[in-house]
Image (tube, rainbow, N blue to C red; front, top):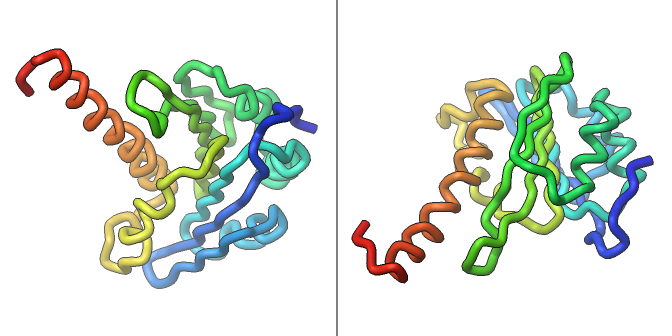
Length: 177
């Protein structure tokens, strides 16, 4: 079982299963529901907020054949940005800007396979709500592409969070932007 920090927030899973013609969103989901939705449509996004349930994270790893070392890295929140290839999936660690101004960043862990994207974050994020308009629009390019396109969209949102913080720092320094 994945060992989690004692002060970690409780885990909550959200699921988005979609393809060009339909979408299904499940809030407060289970690992069994996630496993059942795999392959039902084109892409499955499993989004976990809160890393307080090591058993749930381990079950997710078993259900989707995720590497055990990568799962442990998800619960160890001081990982550096990286991409690791485990053959059947990529493991990606990114850093997100925290809620406070300054240099606070939070870890976003992501698993990417052919039809599945799994994201894990220790706190509630706006990732799902930020992508929801594109996910619910059947004309959106996101709905017609694979899991790699979703992973890119998530990482784009992470990157875009840096611009307001960087611009604020430039203003504080008196540097025109």
